[in-house]
Image (cartoon, rainbow over all chains, first blue to last red; front, side, top):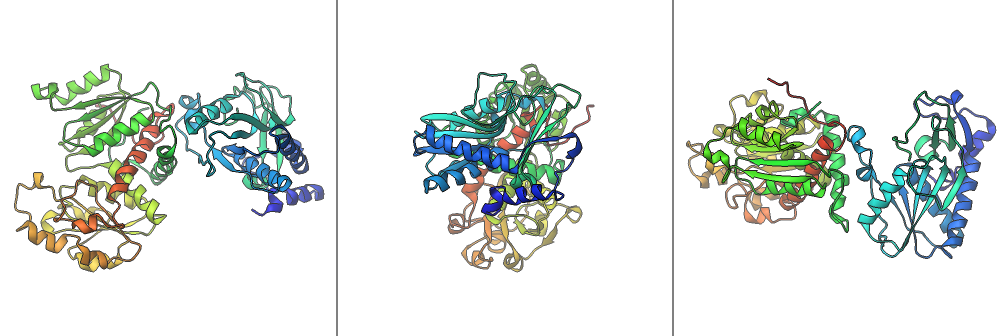
Length: 218
Length: 314
């Protein structure tokens, strides 16, 4: 993945041209409405990067931790943006909170993602957790518990690309790309070039049963 | 639906790779500041050991505890078994205590299979007689994969007492599933009768096989099972089938030496080989905890087991 496509530029070009785009498996384009396209996502991330620098006064002790899977991609993009503004690398890692989820026993045991801390660890740092969609808040709860076993950050903040509401826990995001009012029955799918071949946030129609945020996104 | 891990053949290739991938992630827990995951809180794992074992029992215990399960250790010595209690009655006692998983080691081949028909929890075979020891095969495969990358097409030579070895049988089955080529090397007296039906080749000449091996796995000469004259003297066995420094030099540069332990230094493996950087003996012990954590998580972590095989009740 080169830096340009990580910024979403080729995708943006293709959207502008109206070319056929690579589609993920089982992705029903017609029933899904794109609420954010590549350029919107890029602008949202750029704004979040500046907000992080503002709130952390230059981002000296910031460590970005992406929540598997798409949060990791977003954390890497944010790290690139922060580096470009500040001119020095920002530590970036990944966090898999599967083993800490409260819905583990509702489904067969699932495969695990990678948890990888940057070399300096998280002790005494300002950790910014990064995820794609904030929904029930349960994933973030699990991630906070996982983080507690990895070290003791000075502070933990949360950055999400989309906040779709319907929180089930007292959790809020510090940085939000887009607030997206949804009904419980709708689906929100974030696609990123690195994972899915294109950048987009898709709002899907009700699929018949109310979603209780038991899926990946919480 | 209850599934069990009784034979290495219970694992499909996808299952086996899932266990290895999961073990790879869980191995990282050992480097965390808090070496514990909350995943199996409130689940009970019973270690039911009818045969002596240190490393396997401790390894299962460590694995279960790192996943926050409650562990009950049961060893035949000092239990009602020495008063004549049958396996079935012992099993029903454990059942009444609410065991979610029973890890069993028994001197009788087939005991774990029988146990699986009596209990509701998942049964994990931790070694039954001369039959199988699937988690040992998983940790061996995990060790090979960490050292050599993929197992596809890798040549693995297993040397020694195949006849009495549950480690050899489980490894042959699992490595076959994972696409490795296995060669057994042993004196004819220490090979099982039906070895020609196993998915592997057989040789009697260690020196010819060594230069073509990516992995050499030395098996323990099991003196406690040697009640017949399988070979003339220990010294002759050691000369023909032992791994010493000269033989080590015949291996390709990348090849590794494995041993399931406990080792008979000077018999099947020379001390200098056991302590060489190409020996993975100590790694195997550490990897054992990760592999067993993966098995326990995949059997007990979700609403139903993600790996293993069902056993029809009788």
